[in-house]
Image 1 (cartoon, helix red, strand yellow):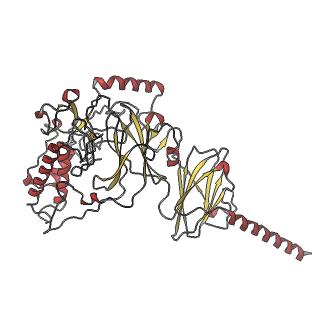
Image 2 (cartoon, rainbow, N blue to C red; image 1 turned 180 degrees about the vertical axis):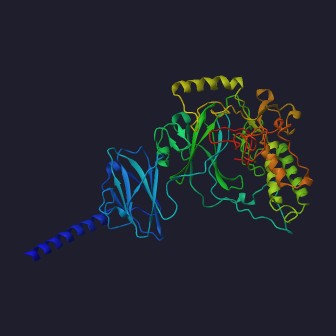
Image 3 (cartoon, rainbow, N blue to C red; image 1 turned 120 degrees about the horizontal axis):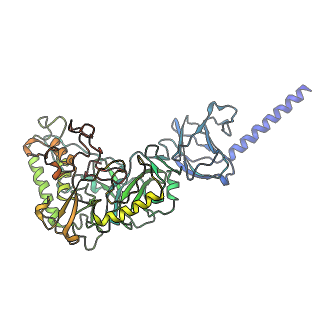
Length: 538
């Protein structure tokens, strides 16, 4: 009798084990280095097998496409004997919960190469999400580097992706010390990379997005910052996959290659929110961009090989048959003198002890040439700005801002500003950009006498002055015999440069002048504030 009971118990155990094996074999296996979209309303099984890997780690990521429903939880295990990992698993030592952050991202790294199991414990509401499994970096993440704003006009904008491939700079050596030509500081810029991330630009009116908290990196209403959530939002103005956007690869600085987007169709005096999505899963942003007024008289310039960091509005007449100035249509009376200055400077620099210890243990002639190029381009191709006190812009801007304030009271610090001013200032301070009124018909009132007279606005325009640090960088990097001397902040530097924004004595007025000790520490911030023209300083 006892023997029959033991035999029956053994048969029942084998039957349960066989059913588990059949059930497990029928489960879907998530593919390595790929994502899987899941809708909990149509789940046939709440568990998924994790693949084996050739490495010792398996990274599982979650990206919510909608707000997290009450009670929904996610569990993983590297113990394949646990068919349904959950909070109530019999042995919880090998079961781990993937906690989703307030921005909609969650990830967990499992040790071992034998695979495992992933399970969804469904809550009360349906939920759409993506699951990624990789043997390297997380598939889903919020990138730390932000998109970069070039500049805006009343209805156009230039935006760059985060740098994705650093420039491989080979330092020249003595006695064959050569420097890049005047026309191109980066010889590799003519050979764009054959393999690069797939970036997508998403732009929408800031009013269509919830307030964003930069400290916690979350939206105020709990909406995810994930790629699938952002792409599905309504009221999107620009999607580079479907909109008419001029897209190109550019090498604009030593940080490396970027994707550049030039687009139009924006409204004057409007705040826009910008995201860049990498490979459909990783998110960079958000940043804020602000368009100028309809009276703004300057066109954008970009893609100039001799001035790769010029990507802003310049005081030139609007081009006849193009939306912006590039190397193809830049007037020769602007480009040729600039190239001549660069060539002559390089020849003079090479007469010094380039590549030898006599020069400097910290700087090189290449550093000097690059700093000089940045400064030269910023003064020969000055940047147009727009004063927030101009009557033509203040009326419409202030009325819009007042209406917005009445609609909803905004938190001040760290939150998205919806002030509609063209050169909006921080709501937590009284900072204004460094602007100077100019007239293109008066050559004595400009650094570059070759600039033609503007045909609009009676030749009047406003210059966003270059940051003093662009000049200081040349002083630090170049030998004394070149005679480079920048104005001093306590005397007349304010007449021709933006002073005290990046470097300065903000914490101790009248005290020591410190690098990054200025009022902002940067030339522009993620909110669309631009205080001085600082190519290479953002």
